Length: 353
Ligand SMILES: NC(=O)c1ccc[n+]([C@@H]2O[C@H](COP(=O)([O-])OP(=O)(O)OC[C@H]3O[C@@H](n4cnc5c(N)ncnc54)[C@H](O)[C@@H]3O)[C@@H](O)[C@H]2O)c1
Image (cartoon, rainbow, N blue to C red; front, side, top):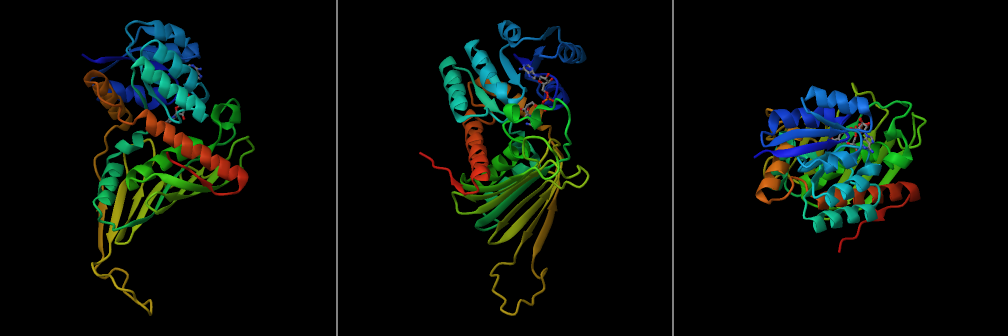
């Protein structure tokens, strides 16, 4: 039997991606209720998907006995409150990233869901871009040799807009890093299968006069020793953004374009050095001699819909969400360490128990 879903915060990413993909891709999920603070958004989205229950308070949606699970797609400053409320009502919770705006809130969210016996997971859906999956497989196969560096970039043009919550520190916590960098950090750790242990960052408002960073450049060190760079800008035109993902190792490299983003598209090129590569003292060599270069492109799979399908499967089978609460917590831990580094101008180490 399909899992009956309610949506809290139906206007933005929910309406643009998650609900349409839930309807199209997740045949084990059924949308039964939507809620948005904005009554017009609640009504419009409910009508669009033929749902009769449209609410303007989360209490009404959580009291609705047909709702088994909720997808929360509201600004991050209310995730904590809404997750606690949903857990108290015994609903499973698929929540948007970032998890929260403080680690103490995030811990409470995990505890509350654990005590209530409900699943909690987060929407790091870029793990389900087929190209990112293949890149991970490639790196994990050892084909690149020892990984020494990974870079992920996600960038867009985001001018000042009256009322935009992402531009307000008290709601969003930060700017381009927390909004877009959260995905980049998660992707690199997941592809390299290694946690970030140290961070350093520059944050600036180079172009836009809002109170969060529009320019974020982060340097990372991973547990396996590899270095990393994550760069996120709100001040580069969409048309100029490349959204690149790069991995370099002792045997080769991967360069991906368009795999960091909301579309399930992209392509990547692998470049492997010939075996027995030797040092060239005079630096004169044919850069392509013996190099194996391949371009990989796959048919995209709807990432948001896949997340809902896998989450619904986990609810029915007693399994785990596609991306766990612990991943959400860890990602927030790394984000907050980066903000501390940017504020202090000093590298910050992340300690693991
Ligand atoms: N995983 C992804 O790819 C992805 C993409 C975009 C946004 N997000 C995350 O999703 C969340 C929402 O972002 P968005 O772009 O959809 O924002 P948005 O502003 O476009 O939409 C949010 C909707 O929530 C409603 N809302 C605001 N506060 C509410 C509340 N307290 N209760 C109920 N409804 C409320 C708004 O009226 C609006 O319709 C953020 O945490 C963001 O980081 C994730």
